[in-house]
Length: 232
Image 1 (tube, rainbow, N blue to C red):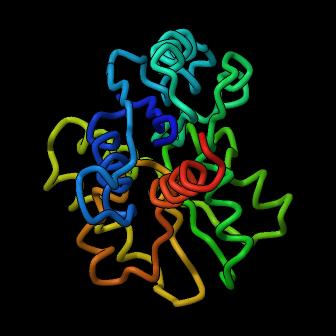
Image 2: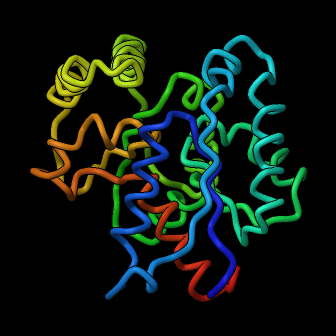
């Protein structure tokens, strides 16, 4: 058995559980012993990533580095972070550890580059949008994209925070109202670039799976591939 996949989670806890579920669902296994070993650090006291970025401070970084040490000491083979906004600090986190880290942003960009997708609409936190985590990569790779208007972006944040607060029905109601304002086309995809959004839109995804690109799912598939073929 190879070294475990490490998950630096807690941002938020539901997204961490979703990442673990996706590892299980994407692993071919006929018994318990066939599954991939995973070590999860889910300590949710990491400061709000969006608020820190918008307020121009690095408060989350210290905690994330502290919790990376737990995964290092557990001798994991690679580390993933099921939080898009936290990838604002990805390079600095990778510099702080010798353990291989797999990027959710890079996972999504590579998938889109290799797909026949004409345009991507980015659904993400305001911090992810404002730091252009995805936009810069789309420009570099000549991928057409759009971002929501300020009005819709505020609603997206409201939906995300409602979900984090356990107000699931209200979160879904708000996000549903946003999606309904878009013209749905097969060659135009929604990139779900916040790990709560696939949970909020789970009903839409069941009905229109081809309209959505789940960045979490792509991260997990890359981590599984690394485990199986790169030997973490």
